[in-house]
Length: 115
Image 1 (cartoon, rainbow, N blue to C red):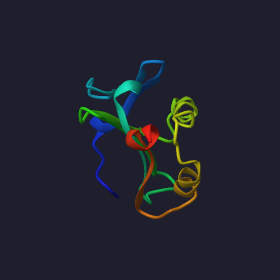
Image 2 (image 1 turned 120 degrees about the vertical axis):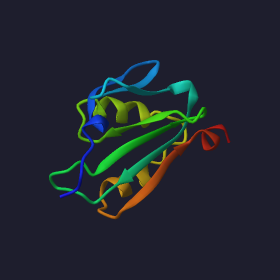
Image 3 (image 1 turned 120 degrees about the horizontal axis):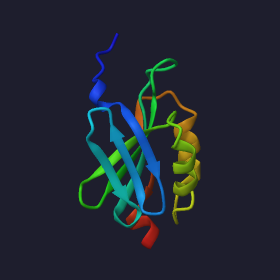
Image 4 (image 1 turned 90 degrees about the horizontal axis):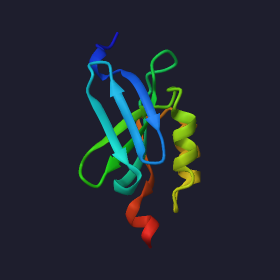
């Protein structure tokens, strides 16, 4: 059984017009604003079926960011927002969500949206 850090577990994830904020069980917070978002990566870790195995990794241009488990209650609202990003790679997203490979899939980059 893998060792788990309870401090990394989410207490709450909020998706709104400003961005995404994830409050961790230890009280700390990770966040990224939509205006600072630089990349979206789907990270697949073949741990399932009982452990979370797919994460939305959101990177900000300032090096900040957050990871949201796909099973989080806020994941549907997050996905809805992400799919509206100009240049979002829907095909790569489907590939990421239907694999059990230990891999990271870049589904959006700010540089691609501007070109």
